Image (cartoon, rainbow over all chains, first blue to last red; front, side):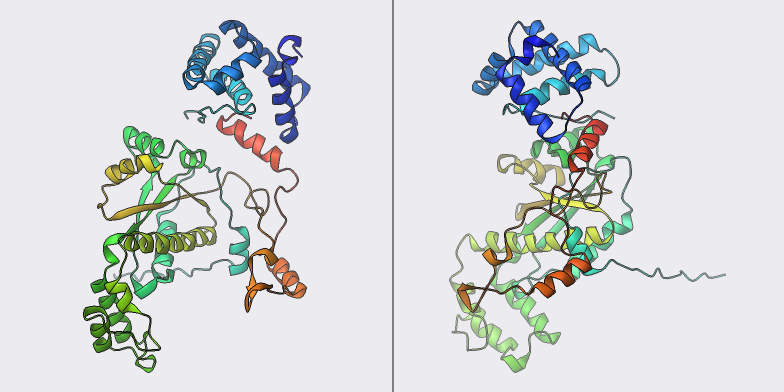
Length: 107
Length: 290
């Protein structure tokens, strides 16, 4: 697991909440934490501050979602991988009580 | 040569099993259309089964096939309801409306007149057209044996038509749920629109101003197991049912409970083993976060 985001309170809460229902494998978590870590580095923020801001301000949350979309598309220009990468971070938001919009694959 | 169409023999499921399988299904096979005859049968069941005071029948429905919608119209209808997950996935949307315009004294009178002619409202109980006229047109006091229609006709509160149209349509939509389960379909009721966005549904479906949006019934083949993770949490029988007055619990006979378990009405409570694995699989298949 990536040590940097895994130490954050919000990340621990995310892992506990998801694993309380879905029991993801260690490999799944390694990948999810990598995506979250990369996105946090991209926006120059840490997980706890992201959640605090997103829950306090709708504008801040919307800006995070826009940056998330850009981040995912830059890394995965084609196919469903961008959607999947977005979903990792959306899951992090949802399990920390932030309201985010979710949609299925386009097709 | 003339051909004779062979009548189809319809066989439904056992009533207890239908009730026992009723769930709010939120995952649908988006790729599998629903046969038109199944939708018609749902509507036919509601038409003959719905019960309403004075036989007003205020329910109206608009059936929408998601795949046939122009992209912009589909998006507006989905956004009116905040893009609820089940709504996005369900192939068929039945919008249920309550028509306030039928909750009027003259319609009461007309419908009740039909009931008298049909032998439903019996003269033996005191019903007659003359009595209807006296109660509804002249506000004369209802005799014992008949409902106080004079009060409805002459003391109708302004909000009553909307309340009556709404509540009776709720009942009809619930019948629609059971009819859909009987067809082997998944179904659920959800808000047709956020109250602030109800006008979008009215505009897109071109319904009269007197039609209140009541429920949106989602219909499709379930992508989840028919048990959908087990029966949802229900309040204990003893908390909600009473006998004689509200201080005495209706005594539940364990033998009846056992019979209903065997008949399929009472099943395993949610979440059944494997439910969250199923949800994980569904989320991954459709592209939702877990």
